[in-house]
Amino acid sequence: MSRGDFIALLYIVAFVLFISGLRMLRGPRTAVRGNQVAAVGMAIAVVATLIDQRIGDWGLIALGLVVGTAVGIPSARSVKMTAMPQMVALFNGVGGGAVALISVVEYGEALEEGGNPALEELIPILLAAIIGSISFWGSIVAFLKLQESLKGRFAIPRAVNAGLAALSIALAVAIAAGVESEGLFWVMLLVAGALGVLAVLPIGGADMPVVISTLNAFTGLSAAAAGVALDNTALIVAGMLVGASGSILTKQMAEAMNRSIGNVFFSGLGAGGPAAAATENGGTVRSTSAADVAIQLSYARLVVVVPGYGMAVAQAQRAVADLAAELEKRGVEVLYAIHPVAGRMPGHMNVLLAEADVPYDKLKEMDDINGEFARTDVALVIGANDVTNPAARSVTDSPIYGMPILDVDKSSSVIVLKRSMSSGFAGIDNPLFYDPKTSMLFGDAKSSVSEVLGEVQQL
Image 1: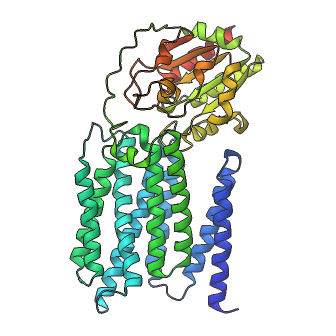
Image 2 (image 1 turned 120 degrees about the vertical axis):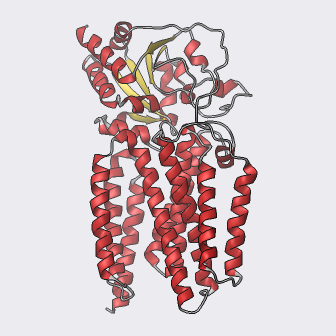
Image 3 (image 1 turned 60 degrees about the horizontal axis):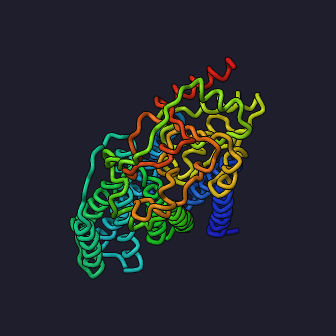
């Protein structure tokens, strides 16, 4: 077997593992194993690339591996589960930034060798540079907003973003048409980066699941384009898999919010900063105590926990799991209702609850759990607002009208844990809070759940 055939065989094995691992990521039971399988595939792809005779400076490659390992492993092991969206945003950005830098190097080397490369190589380089730069800078802004280091309401006119997009494309066309200028290439990168910043800047936390999925898709597409330019099969296949899966996930996230992707990026919903003032409902809010909640939960047959970002912020997932375990000792059935866009990234609630050792079979997706609310004695809503808002069904002028929600209002009783009566990211009031069968337990979610647990244990 020739060297080329052996390398091709290694790539095929790697691609099979990529696809198998990706398939296993569909459910929480197999997600960890799927991640491991895909990692093995990536290791094989790296080995195949390293034994290729086209490799240049081995010293720099070794240095990169050492630095990446030294930074990546401690960061991944020490990050809190509540900060997982920030880490995902950074990982997206690093991938896009790496591709953009590869494009700069390839174009610079081509100029040193005599001018612009052939179009079949130049066009993928330009695409990788633009998309990679957008992904990198957009991901940085997403990280800062998720970290709450960047606060406030930012209104960027659509014409500005459209102008930046047109300018970056025009610069790419000029280079492809024959202009030979590394300086112009850098200007194109900077314009694309500015577009990434300004496109993500107005978007608020409620829309971050869609933003993260979109940036993930962008990183994959830029890697695939770089693979075409470098004639690297591993980059092409891996990039297309990431790009395709990210695009599908983006579409699913947008559908879960009953909104188009364009609406997410160009509307004012969830646009950061303080929520808009809640509308006057005219109803009465019933406040409750931890002792009363404990009694309701202890004598229920079925309790459905509805986690939201409020649970993540308070890091209350372990307290919630402990409360559920105590209730189950008393014969109470406890399930968890997971909305597709609850939290700040796809699967955020699943990750948090899995960290707290909640059994996977108790995590129910929206379509599976909505039919159970009619027989639910108590729905315990922890920091979830817009995804439980009944206005999505009936108020036609509501920003969330038509968005699929969790049908918690069909339960016999509802207990909502919130810090205050402030509205969610959509900036609208929630009629659920004024429903006669709803009680509000105000305070930090972790403290409130811990108090309820203490009361249950004393019954």
